[in-house]
Length: 406
Image (cartoon, rainbow, N blue to C red; front, side, top):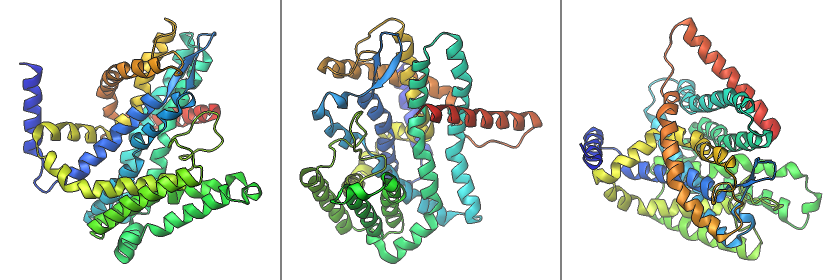
């Protein structure tokens, strides 16, 4: 049986198993936002091979300022939080048990894959040392693995706020995100305004919760049926205008991700520019919803969306490992274009694009086994309980080790 025939049969099975009421546009938006995470990390992050044979993190954004607009497209966390808020409100409304039970279930679904990847890396680190991998390379690897996992913690916190978000959405509708926008704007004014020198450096931390909750609150309003096409147009046009104003008049950094050596960053913690982009992206998503839904009515397009959504946490947790699986062995060969060479030439961009299919294939291979961490843990024997406890200890140990490096 040919590969295309098997793919067609899989698409047909997925199509037959999809409920008629399934909102395909929401799943499609989530899939696009998910895939932007590995693509962004693979294209906006690179390595430099030192004279000691060790890999160090490097970024093409340090050399190519014109590359920064790519981060406007690849930074799609606003879309992810938007559809997350929408889905959470619907799930919360359909719950059959208590709010605490609902939250535990959703937190466990997010936490299991995180425990899995950190436990595996806890066992992998001493093995890498034993094989003679340079300590700096190990440090680089652990930093990259931990880097995307901050998102899970933030997402659990905003998920816990779903009941409040739903209540705010029912009361204030599409304007329920305005106080969050105002809060971030105020903190940014203090951080970057005329009296910035008198403001403590930790003040930016106050932006973490409202900054990421903003798009989630919009999603909650969407789930409550309180976002209209007028709201969508306001979000798109207003968010775009604010985005342009912050860049042109207030000297916000061009890149949506951190650039080595730069004093200011937009994402950690989120600045007002992140919310402006999230607003514009959310408005566009809402306006395109029906068109996306019609497009995904085609089984051949719908099937990959389902596969990506079913592997969401595996993609998030393991995509950096897939890139390292190519880069670490290559470091023993020497400078390999687009992989272990510094990202400071246009040739690196072309070579890195050529490596993307390899990273994808490695992620699929790793994911084949890593997806075992996603299903619910069943109550079992003492041995199974002991294995889970060991995994938790390994995960905690790796987190302490990695955070000690970062």
